[in-house]
Length: 291
Image 1 (cartoon, rainbow, N blue to C red):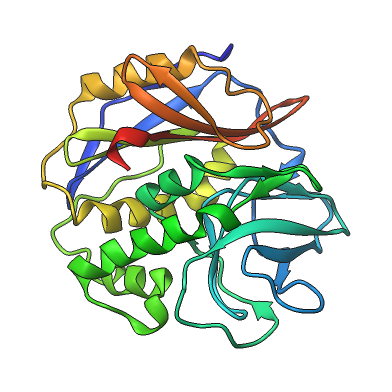
Image 2: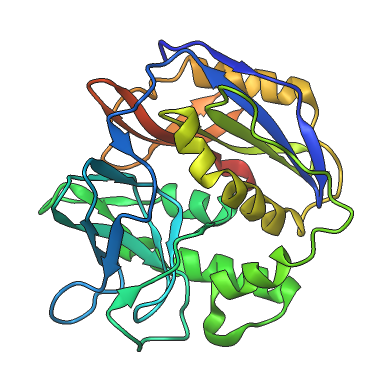
C-alpha cells in the first residue's frame, strides 16, 4: 500500500473487543456516496435468487454497497459478498450470501440496512469466494454452506432464533450495552483494526472519514456480537501496530474481483478491496487463522 497507515491506542470496550483507530494518507473519496438511504434493494426480477439481489441507486451520485452490509427483508436476509459501485440511476445485481436459512418467502423489497455481519462470518465467506466468469463478480453460492455453518455456531452459544436469522440474533445482543466502554469516532479517522479476545481479527479502511462514520456503530456492534464467544481480555496495542505495518506493505489500492489470500508475518490474511482511479473505496482484511 503506498498510503501511510497510522493506528492509535485501542479502546477495550468489553465483551472481549478492542477497537483501534486507523488513519491513512490516501485521497479522500468524495465523489461517491456511502449512505444507504438512496438505495432500493429488491429480489431480482423473475424468480428470487439466494445469492443475488437487485440494487437501484436513486441518488444524484454513484453509491457504494460495502462488503459485509446486511440487507434485511425480502424473501430472506442477505449479506453483501463484495463491495460494488452502483452508478446513479442504474440497477445492478449484487452478489450476496443468505444469513437467514430458515425463511424463503416474503416481499420483493428489503428495508433495513443498518447492520454489518460479524468478522468471523465475513472471513469464512471471503476466504473461499469464487469468481463468476460470466459477469466478472464474486459468487457466494459455493460457500453458502460455510456461512450457514458459522451462524449455527453462533446459535449454539446464544440460542436458536426464528429462521436462523443472524440479524435477529444480533438484535438480541444489541439491546444490552450496560457496563461497556463507549468508543468514539475520532477526527479524520478512516478505518479500524478490531481485536477480539486478545488477537487481531480484522481491519477495515474506508475511502473517507464520512464513509466510516456511516457504518462505525454497526462495525462495533458486529464485533461485540462476535466477542461474546471470546475471552474477555484486551488486545495489546503492539499487535495492532504490527498488523498496521503489514497492511501498509499490502497492495490494497486495487480492485480485487475476489479476495486474495496472502501469507504474512502475522499469519494468513484474506484481503478484499475495491478502488477507483482516484483511490481506495473500501478494503477489509481478515485474519484467517482465527476465522
